[in-house]
Amino acid sequence: MDWERIRRDFPVTKEMAYFESAAMSPIPTPVFEAIMSEYRKLVEWGDANWCRDLERLNAVKSVCADMLNGREEDIAFVANTSTAMSMTGLSVHKKLEPDQHFLTMKDEFPSSTFPFSYLGIPLRTCEPDSARYSVSSLLEQINSKTAGIVTSYVQFGTGFRQDLLSLGEELKRRNLLFIVNATQGFPYFHIDVKEMRIDVLAASLHKWGMTGHLGSLFYTAPEFRAKYPTAVAGWLSIDPGEGLVPGQMNSSPEIHSSAQQYTLGTINLQLLMAFKTALDYIQKIGLDVIRKRLFTLTDYLLDGLSDCSVEVISPHRSYAERSAIVSFKVGKKSPECVTFLRKNKIYVSQRNDAVRAAVNIFNNFNDLDRLLDGVQNFCDKIPLS
Image 1: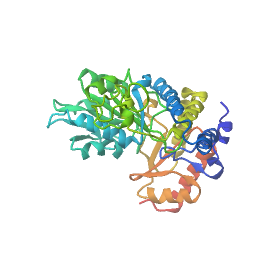
Image 2 (image 1 turned 90 degrees about the vertical axis):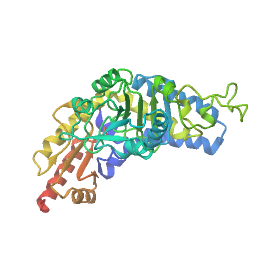
Image 3 (image 1 turned 90 degrees about the horizontal axis):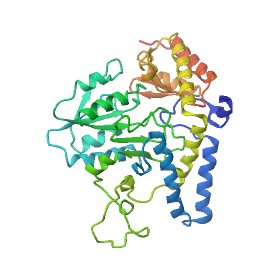
Image 4 (image 1 turned 180 degrees about the vertical axis):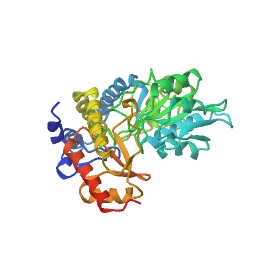
């Protein structure tokens, strides 16, 4: 693979060493051109292509479904992961017993958990062991009042990647719901919603989708929708029969049985059409090739950090638990280190009390050397105690 050619598709690399894809990935030039093309149609044609674009959206859903080993009718797109989790919580809340609860992780991003707690759904928090959440430790927390588990595929702060296959199989045996925030894993890391027995999956696409703020992928299993249909609806949630608009506005509406029920109304079709270009771009490289590249880059970074005065907090002994994220603490000075690196055009994130570096397909070893040199320079100049 010619990684330098791919790097040239990302103009951000001319200005900085960018390690913030876990916050938002930059847009490659082919995707930017697709975005401009879609918006140019609005300039030149207005609403004339809207119905056709709705049909084109099915092709985007189909690609996502294939990547998840799901079905096109199980895929929807919503504004963000918080919206997806709120819809899930509203649907589930109506059928929970008063003393039932969900298990979740201490390190979860708030979009996974706050929609549930705001609705009054009790959450019990599982504690990590060296930033890991083993399947066995989670199963030990389950009791007769547990309704299911809400977890990220990849923890945003540490990069720990959960064993969704083993966890999903165990939850299925216990007839418990499995709700996954895959924001930091999709589309690079393998997800099979059928084998992993996932009931609900949401993934914000501005992280690794490389198309900007286009929303969140929202997968629901058909069995989940049958038992917990949407608690909110709009005009596009309704099966109109013949035509596009429901004919009898004041009659009792029949909600789509598919995930279309979560599409309440109009959405940004332009970015979603361009997202198809991003998916094609990623698949042309190959997901296996991408994962191998990410591990090669993180191996290099981890090896370099071992020579610096830092504490790596990301689990990294096993590739099965690793992601594109490497987080480390620089004594008590991690926030100052982030500021120091940014002044030198090395862009990382501060998450909790750690420095988070996320590698992507456009990064190279020169980027990593800049990061490592920057961290070492900071450690040499600043007392870390």
